[in-house]
Length: 115
Image 1 (cartoon, rainbow, N blue to C red):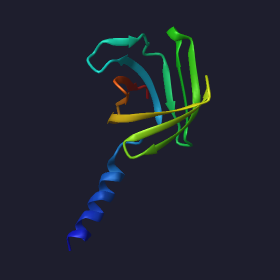
Image 2: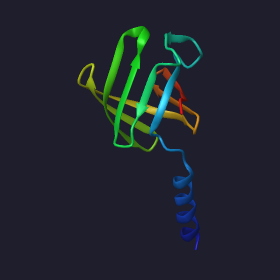
Image 3: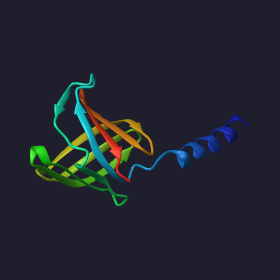
Image 4: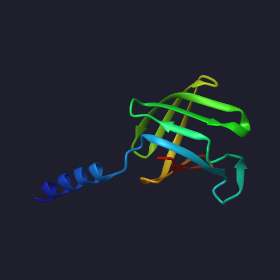
């Protein structure tokens, strides 16, 4: 009887959780204590597409990156095609319709929705 209750509840949770794909704008990159590590601007885009591709740029660093991503629970695995061929893993610390926070090591990547 308990199993019948848990399955619909877990399906409801999945259906109500915000979608990861969308257009985000950088808020800041910090050390988790609020100390800014890299200068970003709200106009710097970060796109996560439903087809599993991503693209972002940080104008002040002259950086453009793109590739593909896979979500595994609360983790994101990015396979970069540009600027170099590498794989990096990020933890999803927070995800809502208006905000996304990723972390890698002690670095926090904070984004606001641009839509």
